[in-house]
Image (cartoon, rainbow, N blue to C red):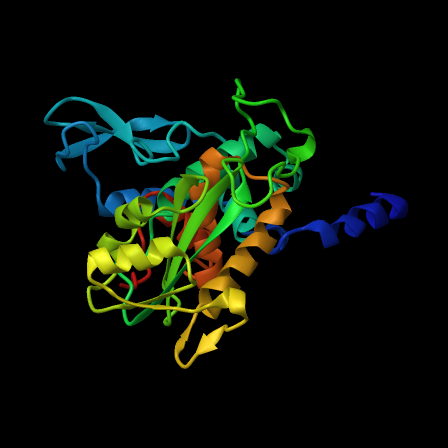
Length: 322
């Protein structure tokens, strides 16, 4: 290699991710190349091997295909591999999955991830929602003690829809009507003082008492103190549900009344809004996926690409908080 070519080559090292740098060091040291993602997938599958069709655990090896060990169920005769029945089934480029998990943990956009991995942006978009489909379900089962609840509104978006129910907006557009209207989607966030967070996409327009009854009772203790702003729907819901409730009159400038405040949940709203701006508008139908993604990052529940890949297959090696 000529000196000029060498300089051009090493100048590209700064663009490598941490995982790519480690892989490069391993190659320079002569280490045998190993597909870490495939090895991780196979190890997870061996721990809970069963037939997706009949749930039998009696199976034997049945050759290889697409880089994965195939199995044949003795009970029903169906063949399967480690990814059958998981969100990652029938996806290609398995060697890039851990690198893509790094991109997810770094909140990389679809195009940025595609550029880093050398694949089409449609591929990284498909991977985003496959990787998040199970990982987003790792949520607290119940909120305890003092729980704050508040709602935020984002502009309704039909991004990616083949048929729009309204005229298209250029670059996402802005709200045309003043105040809260059906142009906005409501996101209800409930958060206790330990940081455990639950969120719900309740639909278009203002939050209602019926929506609160549909979302909150299964996930909050009966002896919880519910702290909210002065929205009438919260008062009616708490009275009918038999919950202790305290409202903070934020409009009057009163933000803290002893231990009663909604600053914890409002701070979460602020972080969520700032993070969503990275994506220049999120399709409303995918909002639950993005909310789950934000919870993963905000709570630090999943810190490594290996853990995220395991969670995508339904295995949560970390302890679930309740």
